[in-house]
Amino acid sequence: MQKYQDLTGKSEISHFDIQPEKILIKFNKKAEILIYSYDKVGKNHVENLKKLAISGAGLNRYIIKNFSHLNKNLDKGNKINWLIRKFKLRK
Image (cartoon, rainbow, N blue to C red):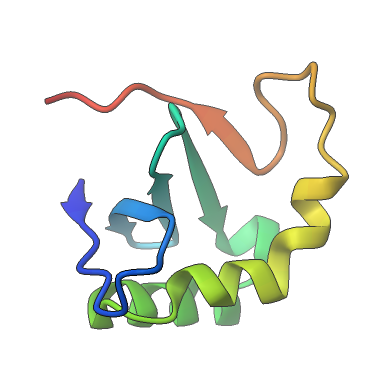
């Protein structure tokens, strides 16, 4: 995973990994990595997320604006669901 630049210094995102049809995003203070894929959130959103991740600014804001409703609807007892999968970062 690549470290997120966080040019504003306000982001909760620490790392990201760009793959052909998805992006994986690691947040500070969380062991989980969010996976945004073409089939789950759409190609346009994934490509926007990739651009923001590379630029180092706006990624956290974009996720909050476009996907916060998904996070509120997640079953808190479910460790793996359609958007979030649990992975551990390897140092």
